[in-house]
Amino acid sequence: MIPAENFSERVLSWFDEHGRKNLPWQQDKTPYRVWISEIMLQQTQVATVIPYYARFMTSFPSVEALANASEDDVLSHWSGLGYYARARNLHKAAKKLVSEFDSEFPLTVDGVCELPGIGRSTAAAILSISRGVQAAILDGNVKRVLARFHAVPTWPGEKKTENQMWEIAEGYAPQDRAGDYTQAMMDLGATLCTRSKPQCLLCPLHEDCMAIKLGDPTDFPIKKVKKTKPTKSTVMLILINEDGQLLLEKRASVGIWGGLWSLPESEESESLILDAEQRFHFQLMSEESLESFRHTFSHYHLMIHPVKLVVESQSMIHDSNKYQWCTKDNALNLGLPAPVRQILIDME
Image (cartoon, rainbow, N blue to C red; front, side, top):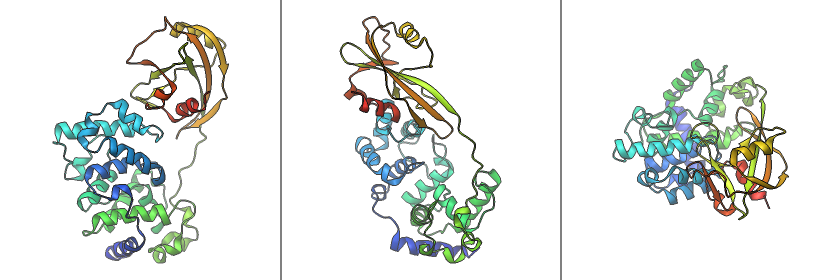
């Protein structure tokens, strides 16, 4: 291991010349603004996040504004970003900040970790970037840099390996310029030390990188053995009444697409229409099966079979907390799962 001062000096010198400094969340770096960006950037590329971040901050410019918003409004701003638990936890954390912390972020990593949806690395990023607190981070980009630099021989998802990497990360974190160092390490992983095509000769650490010395940096981090993803199936019912409105159903607050508005779902069966008629008490006017497609989650594939049903709906059940009739345009302004949004966009 090279001396800690030399490691951080190299990284910071590279950042001064090549690091990203003009991203929206790098301006006016308050804990709130950094927090929103860090949560959005989890599992999501910078280019995708930028327009979402701009819209989110326009609608919710402060923690108070976010806390006072409805969950539907928050989820509608998140629609398309995926991993919707992130948005629900943002909303819960904002409420907790307002009610228990006088709208101010705690001053320690442990304190910030008490907020819903915030782990050790995210808390450290928030405090180091916005307040200059010396705190090491270990997000995906940083894990990749450190795993390659040290040629860590085991999968970082194992607890023992993760603890080892936290020790490495803490050993390199400098006392000065903590926020710049945090951003530099994230940038290094995102722009040079990438997953498939690392630009090693441009990296300030390449002369001492053990992965390079062993031959192929992409051998690190060690990968978890992949399991074959199972495939599940569902029928999405596009129920349209005589006025051209469609029926949306609010999903439970936990689980896949929790809290979003979606199309009612049904299992594939020969009695699909009969089951739907009994469930929603409608009289069928016409039926049309649309093209099926596959949507992939982290742990399984979902085959979606959309079925368009035009119905007479005067006697249909109506619970405004769980169901609502709305026009296609109004539906597209709600928080919808990405495949449901695409179905509606493609639907004539």
